[in-house]
Length: 278
Image 1 (spheres, rainbow, N blue to C red):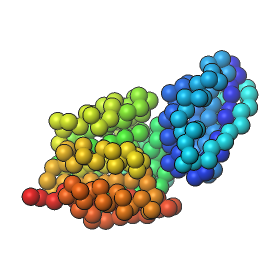
Image 2 (cartoon, rainbow, N blue to C red):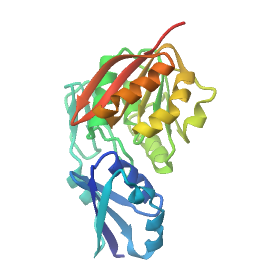
Image 3 (spheres, rainbow, N blue to C red):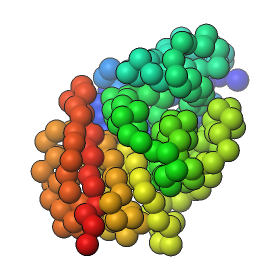
Image 4 (cartoon, rainbow, N blue to C red):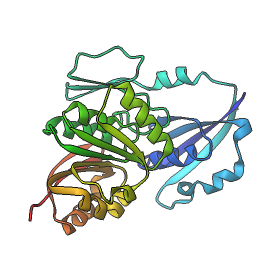
């Protein structure tokens, strides 16, 4: 079986690459490689429908400049291709994130992730910063939400850090399934994965909420995060740039969510808020 290779040039690359991967996955694309200037995506030739590209909304967005070229290639060993592009990382000399075929590092927390088409290997700056935050906090006995969980890596780190109950939620079915696989792969017993969005939070309450998504979704879902966060609880947000900080802060302050700390990495930022007690 031959495949079609699509090379997408994206300016700026993020968060458009993340969104484009999700949309392409819904129309049959099977494998993705993230590059500095965009992504490369693959789909079986017999399953490709040119008209389906008109349904990829981000390609019509005025916020990003996206172009692509298409090439037919012979069947590829995707495991080999994936292994060439996925390298292990170490966060704060405490937490390692690696694939099953990498050697085990000498760290406190050894996280094994097979991302497939899901976002969240620790390589992206936003995931890296969120792991940093989790390594700094006392999560013992806390109930945690990983919203937009991707591979489930942040929920897994939180369980390793002592969280007693965790929900991992993602609207994408592939991410939901991949989280379940990675939870089992890391021998986690306190994480429950759910497929859906903020509507699932209606009757749920947490001590810690982690949301690594994108600016617009964060702003839209802030009322739900606020309702679900216990008094004195911690909210960690990422998936946006430094220039977005004022609007994120302003929205949080509307709900009594008080800014406490921030991190910045490769032009991306992560923020920590505390829900004030009445």
